[in-house]
Amino acid sequence: MPDRVLITGARAPAALDLARSFVAAGWEVHLADSCPCRMAQGAGVAKAVHRYASPRLDVQGFRSDLQFLAQSLEPAMIIPVCEEVFHLAAAALPDFEARLFAPSPQVLDELHSKHRFVEVCERLGISVPKTRRISDQAELDQVSPEAERLVFKPEYSRFGSETLIGPSASQLTQISPAADRVWVAQDRVVGNEVCFHAVAVNGVLTAFAAYRSPWRRPGGVGYAFEPLDEVAASSLLDAARRLAGFVGEGQFACDAIIDADGRPWLIECNPRGTSGLHLFGGRRELALAITGHADGLVLGRERGHLGLAMWLYSLPEALKQNRLASWRGERREGQDVIARGGGVAPVWGALIDSVAFSIRAARAGCSLEQAMTRDIEWNGPGGAQ
Image (tube, rainbow, N blue to C red; front, side):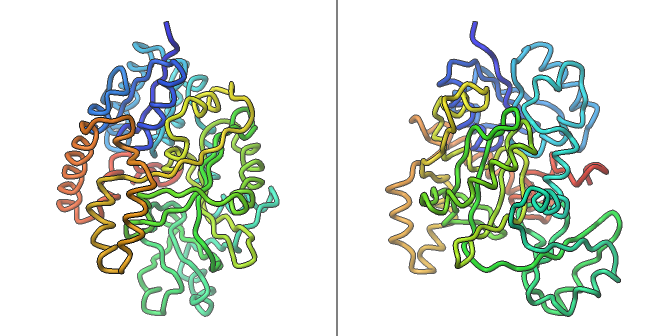
């Protein structure tokens, strides 16, 4: 009987490529999430797609459901993809810790906090912009004269939805820092925005993919993924190796800016699965890297995109910005990561999922990205909001 893996966060397209990797490596894959995942069901890559309660809205139900899945499926590994990683790590369920492929709760918080992450990097000798913690109005007033060269964002935030870059005095009035709503002010670095996704096993970097997103939604969420050239990728590799030693076990991803001199500056971290998983192309080598059986460092170099988003979002932008040639090039050279492997069922499933989340966003008066994560979001060790 093949080894069994439970991958949570099935709503994310990245979960599909992670699942494909384990299937290619001979594992039996089970996917799970707290919302309907028609995309995952349509892909047919998993043995089954399971449901559990929302970790933010029903903590006890979530823990009970996960304990039932762990006991009934007996997976050798449990791998989170989205923000449910924080809830899973905090659950402390019996026999769960040994199976969960994620950093410890303390390490997760140090990576997720935009202030503490900078402190971690400084200790490790990794270049980061000067970052100040703002917990009250007095601390905000101190940095206000320098606001034009600073970037302001909540200590725990996602999608860049509240980020203020070089704000004016009137824009600064939007910030209301408090002990339970801390902000950070970070020196602004000018350059090319890039990302990397990495895997650590026993403190060793086993998988790495450096990329940029040439097509994005407002707020910075990318839906096209282009590998960086060798020089740019190499400039980030040392930072990834150092962070792997700190992370210990699990996935982590960083946003960075490479300045005009080619120097990378790490600005924040997502200690979970991200779109960088797509660059591994669903190959078995990623599963081998996660299980510690890869022959050396596994690199992700595949170009890809979310086909549905390319039609719905980037085509109108391409027409508006005279980027139609670039749009056609991405469609021609990059692979639709949802339809990877053939078949239209996951694409139709993704469309239905997208409509459902769009309705939820309209009702809640929030962005699509926020609607997609409201039931799993995590706002620091104090708990979800």
